Image 1: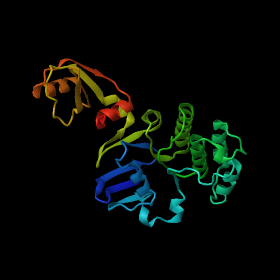
Image 2 (image 1 turned 135 degrees about the horizontal axis):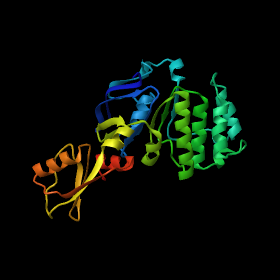
Image 3 (image 1 turned 135 degrees about the vertical axis):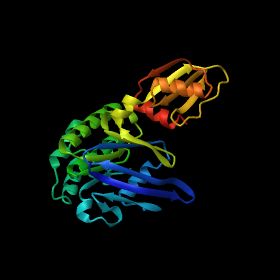
Image 4 (image 1 turned 180 degrees about the vertical axis):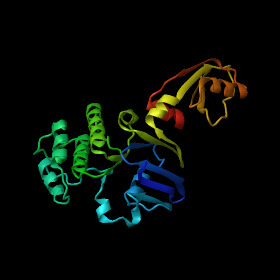
Length: 294
C-alpha cells in the first residue's frame, strides 16, 4: 500500500533530554492513523517535525514522496494542519474568517465549512472570541476541511470539546475522510474517540514505538488476563506479558498470546496461576495495558 507519510530513523532531543531515537513509521494512503502515547512521549514533537516547524536531530521525513525540509509550495497546499492554538483571528465572525481564508485557496469548498458549522449550531455572525474553546477548535477544523487537503494532520483535535460535540465530530470526520478518500494522521488524549475513528494506531512508549497495527487487530487479539496468586508471588519477567501487577493477590496483565500460552509462561516463571481468566478490552484499556498505568 502506498505511503503518504514516511518517517525513517528519527531522533530528537531537547537539550540533554532524548525524546526518541531511531523512530520509523509509515502512514498508508486513505487510512486514518492515530498516534497514541502518554504526555512527554513525543506526539506533538512528531507533529511539529512533520509540519516542518522542527528539524529532527537526525533522520528524514517524506510526505507525498518529498522531503519535508525541501517541500514545494504546491505540495504543502495538499496538507491541512491543525496544531494547538486553533483559530488566530478571534476578532472575526464565522462568516468573516471563512471569506478571509477562501482568498488563499483556489479550490476552496465553503460548503464543507458551513456544513460543519450547521451541525455545531453556531450562527454565521457569531464572533469567534465569544465562542467556547471547543467551538473555536471546530471552526479551525471546518477551515481545514474547506481547504480540501489530501492529508489532514491534526494535533489533539478534540481539545475542549464536550462529549456530545466530540461524538458528532468524530463521526463526521470519519464519514468525510472515507467518502473523500482522505488520509488522516492525528493525536488525541481521549482514546475512546480514537476507537470510533481510526483505522490504525501507533502506540508510543518513552523513546520508542511499542507497536503499529490496525485497531481491529488489537481489539481482536489483545486480552487482559487475571488470576489468583499466592501472597509474595514473583512477577513474570516476560516481554510478551505486558505490565503484570498484583493487587490483593490478583495478578493482572495483558498479552497477545493465547490463554494456554500465557498459562505456560506463568508456570515456567514459577507462578502458580489459579483460575486464569481472559477478557476482551477496549482500546483505552489496551493502551494502559501496553504502556502501564504510571
